[in-house]
Every structure is written in C-alpha cells, then in structure tokens.
Amino acid sequence: MAISFFTSRVVLQALGVSDYGVYTLVGGIVVLINMLNSALTSSTTRFLTFNLGKGDLLLLKRTFSTAFIIHLTFAFIFLIIAETIGLWFINTHLNIDAGRMVAANWVYQSAIISTFLGITQVPYNALITSHERFGIFAYIDILNSILKLVIAIIVLHSTFDKLIFYSILYAIVAIAIMMIYRIYCIKNFDESKLLFIKDISLIRSMLSFSGWNLFGSLSLTISQQFFGVIFNWFFGTLINAALGVSNQVQSIMYSFIGNISAAFNPQIIKEYANKNFGRVEYLVNMGTKYAGILISTTSIPVICKMDYLMSIWLVEIPQGAVQICQIALINNVLNCFNPFIYAIINASGKVDKVNIFSSCFYLLRLPIVFITLKITHSYIIALIISLYVPISSLLLYICIAKKALPQFHISFLIKHSIGPIIMILFIGILLAYQLDLLFSNNLISFLVICLFSLVFVSSSSMLIVLNKSERNIIFKLIKNKMRLKR
Image 1 (tube, rainbow, N blue to C red):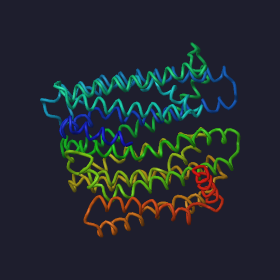
Image 2 (spheres, rainbow, N blue to C red):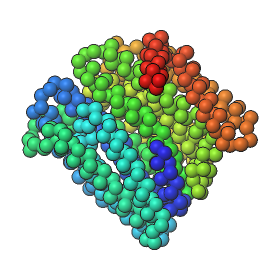
Image 3 (spheres, rainbow, N blue to C red):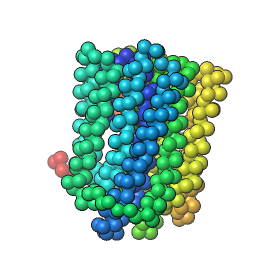
Image 4 (cartoon, rainbow, N blue to C red):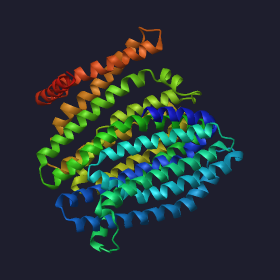
C-alpha cells in the first residue's frame, strides 16, 4: 500500500495532471476490467473449491480446463468489441485534446492487450485462491508494486512521450505478473495442465453461473467507465485526473477488505457445500466484523486529514481530488460488508436475481448523475447521490442471502455487526474533526487522530461489536504474543 501511494505521486508528477486524466479515462479499462476479472474469479473459484473438497482430481482437471475455454472465449469477445465499438467511441466521443489523440490510442491498445491476457488468467488465480495459497499473492503483489514504482521513475526521467511510454511499460509489467502466476500454477497444481475436452453439461453449468456474474460485472464496468466519461463531458480531463487519484486511494484502502474476504470466501463455500450452515453464518458475521473494524480504523484519520495527506502525497493536487476521495472512502465503508454476505449467495449458486437487480442499480446511476450535473453542475452533489448504490446493494444482498440460507439471522447481523460499526465510524469522524480543531500543526494533528482512531474503534468494538468469546480469543492472542516476546 505504501509503495502504491508513492507510485501514484511519481506517475502524476511524470505525466502531468492533463495526461494523467487522459490515462485514467482511456486506460481506466485496465482498472475496471479488474472488477470484471474479480467476478469471473469468484465464479471459477466456486466450482473449483466445490470439486477440490470432493478430492476428485480428474473432475478438478475437467473443471479447470472448461473454465479456461470459457474465459478464452470471453477474452476474444472482449477483443472484438474493444477493437470496434470501443475504438470508435474513444476517437469520436471523448473530450481529449486533438494533439493527444495518438497517445490516447497507444494507451487504449496497451490496455486491450493486458486486459485480453488478464481474462485468460482468471482460472489460474482462482485455482490459487481455491487452494488458499495466499502467501504467493502477497509476494507477487509486492513485486508488482515495486515494478510499477520502477517504471514510474523511468518514465519520469525519460525523453520519450511519457504517456505512451508509461502505458507500454505498464502493460509489460501486467503481462509479466500474469506469467509468473501461470508458471506457479503449472508447477504446483496438476489440475492446471489443460485437457482438450468438451464437457457440454459442465460448460452449460459454468456458463450459467459465470454468465450471471459476468452480466453483473459488465454492468458495473460500463457504469464505472461511463461515469468518468460523463464527468469528462462536463469538466474535461482535469476532473478525470481527480477521479483517477480517487480510484487509487479507494482501491488501495479497499484492498484490506479484499484480502479479508479472499481468506473467508473459500471457507464459506466449503462449509456451505458440506451443509454446515451454522459455521457459514459464523464466518459471515466474523468477516463482516473484521472488515468493518479495519476499514473504520484506517478511514477515520484519512478522511479527516485528506487535504494534509494529499499535500504530502502529490506534487500537484488535481482540483476536487480531496472531496472526491473523502466521498469514495465513505463508499468503501458502505461496501465493506457486501463481499461476505454475497459469499452465501455465491455458494448457493443462485446468482441470477442478485446480478439483475445490482445491474439496475449500477446502470441507473448514469442517468441520475447526468441529470444531477446538468441541473447543479456540482460533482460533489452527484457523487453523494451515487452513494445510493452501495446502500441499495447491501439491502439487496441481505434479502437474497436470506432466501439462499433461511437459517441466516439478518437481524443479528445488522444489530451486532453492521449497525454498530457504521455508528462507530460516524461518531469517530465527528470526534476526530473536533480533535483536529485543537491543533495548528498538521503532522501532530494527524498523529493524534491516528492514535484516537485506533483506541476509539478498538475499544468501542470490544464493547458493542465483539461478543464475550471473541473478546476472550483476542485477549488470549495478546497474552500469547507477550509471552513470546519475553
């Protein structure tokens, strides 16, 4: 996370605000396709995890090979659309200076190449997740962050067109990381060796499941991409630079939640497959609590001191970046509960309704934002109104999860996890802002608010979020750590 924040600073310095806005707008397809890949990974992981639990290696091999064929097909469909409709849209409907259109096309083509290969990579990443080899994700992610920093520094000091050079190097790094994952899977998992089979029933089953997840993810991807396009129409590429910075902050902070849910999801799927529903509910509640506590602790000081942190982080702060980032972090908190509740739906295989309704929420945001900007010309109001999406999604997931698992106690989850965490967060933000008024030195104020956030969230969580047995587990862990140090 630390490397990623510094890398963003160097990239913005190297490209400049306008070119960074162009990269965010056009090359944003790389970021957005990660959402698509995440959904496809979730679908593939579900089938692989089920079959891994059965211990049938041949079935597991057939499942992996079928998944690869499906994703290869998706990749070619993406390529056709991107090189026709996408290419036409980039060159005719975006508010980009005529002198930067050649560079924008280089960015776009680099994004297409890495995205195409990224889609075919999904089954391999899903296989690592199913085997719960999370250590390899950590090592390669650190390597990925370091390589991105290196290319940012190279571009900063290069004499080439910086936007074109950066987009090419970024694509090369993305492809290299994919190959490392692929080689790891081939060397460590027998089922990753492709079989040339045609199992129609398995293809139909996986396509049905993956198709609904793909539908939901495509809707989210379209919504996110055109969200930036609409802002571009009203405010030009400078606002896209602010949105790009916001996406960086949001994705880096949300990576905490992604890591927690990645660890919980395979366990939830396995327990659901074994019909151990009590354990499923326990895991969902625990994941929700951990995610909420962690995101609240980290978000309070960042939200309250965003302007100060931006001044340290970036050489030139894009207009509106501070306010946009603060709203994005609120969006993060409202979204942090969803992955664990969705895991129940994902495990049940009944993902059609949730993706249909979610798609409506995502796509409805576009006309709402356009009308809001047309009337108010305020991106702040438009972004605040957009917060209806995570709130609506949370309510939708809860309702459908209850149908997928009738034993699931919704009132308990809301009363003991979601409700208290949201209350702790907003009270913490209000108190932190009051603390900020007491100090004239920004550094001292930030350090005090960090300490306050840690103490306030942890103590409040001990009292009203965690139950007695959970508190005892934590106290036991602390005592064990203290004994080890002695």
